[in-house]
Length: 577
Image (cartoon, rainbow, N blue to C red; front, side, top):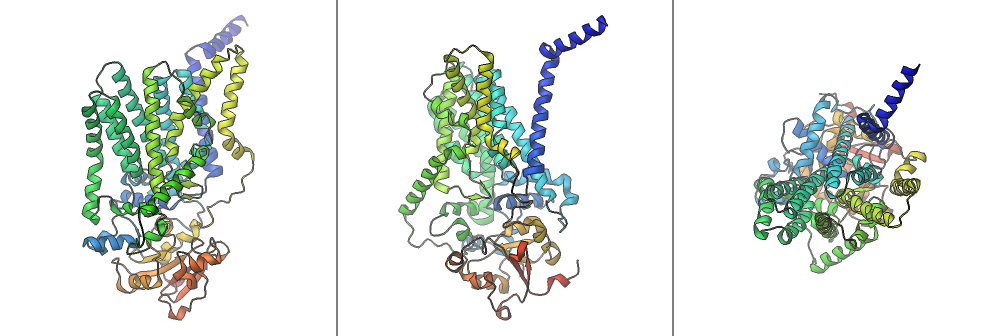
């Protein structure tokens, strides 16, 4: 019995203070991460959330199929851009110049292993491709936490690095973006790596060492960020300005960052210029969002509508977007009290010079992101936004905010260990309130993101439409993704649609029309009659004389028959090819 007692005592001591304790803690951390991932995938996931997520996903599938950066979605404005540049519209319009290339490439990697499940059937409520992309985002999230830990370890200490990573882990906003299909978690990973490289450069500078390699790697990191989302160029510009004033020699350090950035990013600009005559591709027109029309309104027009547009329009838009960001800063920072405390930490003098320098670097990059988002805007779909870059700063800001709060706690000189534990627990509770409420309160959300998406009712078009045919729609991205068929964003006018239908402008016949709550029931009657879909009001309200309409056959789809599909013939009777 004595031997058994000694063995148990040794085991307990090993778990508490020995090497096994480290592995037990690591195993618990892995279990927590896996548990949270399972909760969000099984309980909160309802499919991809936004148009851009589905657009990039369908391009990723084409990449996985060996077709390059080809798209199955045509924007009428792309047709006009190609016509003005003298390009072959029917050929080049199927090469994407709107999206950044890296998210689709990464999506292709996630989609390739499930190639056998690419075709969605009406029996599937959730698409296997959606699940694969969400799982990929979770992997990027976990990888970002690992990078954050090593970054915080260099700026602070091991305990703060672990606590900071834990506070970010319970941020519900980041988890919501992992389920959206947007590239924000890819951006978060790339940004985390780039920040780590910049931290190493700052430390090398303070130690009197060489910074060239670290700055070159950081420049490449910014290049990859730009290839993942062009709006991050604003962050790069801010970091470039910081490097001019901080690193020595000034001109040479900035040149290294700029040169490696250009080396990574320029080939894509050249590719876009060859395809459409504009290095920035079709995405350059995104800046017109809110100027005469929404971005969607501009994309649905063949010709640009800049009548009466002046600098005052852009000034008003900038001020409105900036004011909105400031007013919603807590929401944009994931309701994290600790991350928001970063701004208070600017008043604190850190002992380590490199820590203080990185703090100002983070502030500069965040300011650059704010300026970029003010110029282009943050348009939300289903509670998330493709241009939301505040998300990238939540982890590093959390670490600085936590460092400041711990300094203030230590100044209170409260020696009780239980009080310190209570203080840290309170911080976790405050930062994790949205997550904890999601776990405790039963969700009223449905199994899909309706309105307007019900994937099975969209996937049926895969059988009704042939691969060479085109379907016009107010949500063409969903048709391209769930039905794997070519789609055209509904042109602004019926006459423009007739031109696409009659003359095969895009090199393929437009044989279908799919209308959803995006143009219908999600709007008031006044919006339908006077808004951006006003020319389609008769079709949307089902009052069109179908005998005079180019597409003579129609059927209702969607929940409560809120969608309608028009075609040239009865597609339900067409045998499968």
